[in-house]
Length: 289
Image (cartoon, rainbow, N blue to C red; front, side):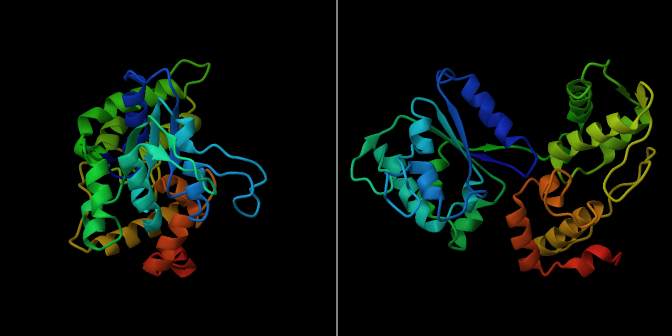
């Protein structure tokens, strides 16, 4: 199980585990548990037989069967509906599945990699996640540090993204002052946010050296030694302020490639649900207070 904040590279770690393993010649199948409607996720995971429900016009092979002999990556496992958690636990224990509407046990040989940005131990305590499933998937835990905890990696990552997004042109260079500013920024969106910033900088820079960068809610940075201004507050208060901050930087846009959901690394429906839960509406986005 891979745990870490959104944008820390959990999926890339899962890909490397697969590609460096003895299963590398078999499929790596990815499932985002938060992006599939609860009514469809059982069919997505286990498949279904023809006529098993309205709209099932033919047999469908689920993700477990597709990943047979390889790896199944269950991203955002903390968002798996509670009723499906019991069925997943049974599959992990018995190493076999049944398609929806079927009565035949199908043996499977799948390595499971799970990922989540949630604190699953706390989710177990408050009753949102089954303890038996948690201990089953937590056999080999990996914790990815936030980018702000690994500042020395930032120059290497910046160079990687400069080369990755250079296209057919020679890679641009990041100015020393700008690179220092990137090192001092707290990166709430982690590596994903860093890549977005580098990509924008490439597009907006005319010369071979990037001398200006634009970060959310700021314009035309120059290097500064000012530390981020943090105050003690509850996690819910911090989450609300950060979501409002990201929404403002996106001019209130929630979905789409430049929307807040993309920057936060969560589905638009999840962001809308969080906004409703935290009491965030249009007046917060437009207000500077």
